[in-house]
Length: 459
Ligand code: NAD
View 1: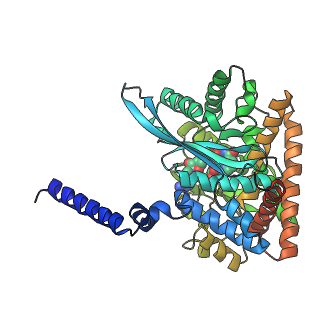
View 2 (view 1 turned 180 degrees about the vertical axis):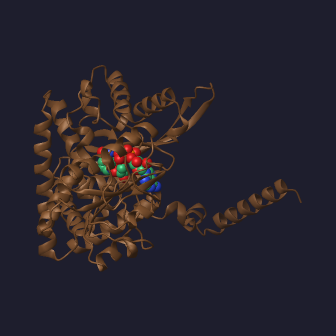
């Protein structure tokens, strides 16, 4: 029998089976669909490795809080999602389809806010998890936003600048029905920065017929970007680390630090901590890293990376793998690269006194549990890397009010916001006897739940 023949026969048998069911009144399509669990089981759309981590954290915090089951249901899944497919003309003249997403987790707190990424792994499930975390982050920092996330699935390293511009502009146009400066505000994320935000802002502005700088944050300063945005996330991590160390009775001066990731966030953290007297003993990027227990010469390393793009080959220390760097002995370990780095596999071997999560989701729930058993405190991502969205909020406020604040004013406000959030988490953890991550999430969920309860259900 040919392959086509066997397909036809199978299809005919299936149709006969369904028709028989219809005739016998045993359910027909409904029954067939009900057996297709992957199609109809609640929440199946969002499932992804990252969403599993986000949900486990949410459930743990909801349990600790004794969250009302109705509100729990409302917060478990995103409020609004848009999937778009659009064609882009490649430089070669060929037309290629791309898929983009925008997920808004909650609209109870005000407009949604969140990054726009270009990466091969962008999916509905990934955006849903990151949008949920953004809700927590905004609520914990007491910013008037719900969480959102979006992006386009592509490999930006294989696209030219003009192809990326066409993708960003078309994506902005495609998601314009659900975004707006009072509805959903974008921001840079993986492989997007000031340049992409300028294209995004211009496309949206062309659609509405006037300049709307407040549609995205992280713009170039001349288009309404703010002072201090570039360093905001890294600086916020340092302010959070400072507050945590103070609480533990430690000083930053003299501490040994390892940073995984040497991009926009990791490089600022390394520099700011060294300026405060810490010694950077290990650092890595995607191509590998370097370790030196005497402390790395950071200006020399920065000059090396500026010239060679990667840390690989830097002569000022021993070569170390991008994952092995996490096991280099230190006081403060800062994952600042990507998710799922500290797991049940390597957590038993970490040789540090505290972990400060600059990346989003760098520790799996299993890794987290091992760190807790080992008595290693973790300053959670939702708090530690909240400096970026905090300064984004300052940018949005300045755009809406047509104001310009100085760099000093931004840094002073950021320090105050980060320390106040850290203090709230420390006292909540102390009074409830939970770890810092659970305390942070309980505080965040409490705030979102309160807003959802007060707004009630329409109609
Ligand atoms: P980036 O792209 O500028 O830098 C990422 C760095 O990590 C690069 O040095 C890269 O080489 C390195 N890296 C990538 N894969 C790696 C791997 N497998 N092992 C080791 N190193 C690896 O990104 P960024 O803006 O610095 O973001 C870093 C993390 O911080 C991400 O998790 C991001 O979601 C999070 N974050 C960033 C911001 C922000 O404002 N940029 C805000 C909040 C959270």
